[in-house]
Image 1: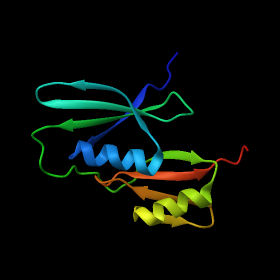
Image 2: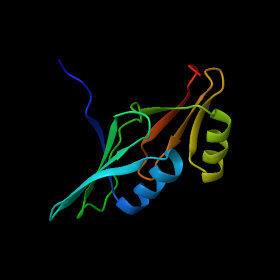
Image 3: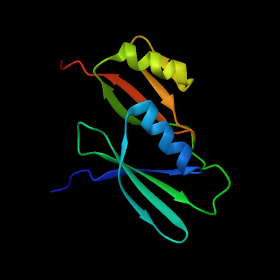
Length: 121
């Protein structure tokens, strides 16, 4: 049997990324591993056990090639209106699909995160 442990994004500026994920999505640091050439920081949300790993390679200076942006994370929110307003104010909305009632935000390194309404409540 298999189950999810975490997903990884490589980042160029760890502090900038930590600030973004805290402000935009409310993710908090759950653990950190510091090595001579890299730092791993695991972020979690308050509702699930899913973790996002941010990997910072200390010597990396050039942006990562993200292909054609055909992959993304998806996160749900109980309040789409408030979430959209916050992300609009942050200037990080990169695509909206009004027909589906979703939108995407872009992190400082160009990764896309889909924002989906939690229709369970």
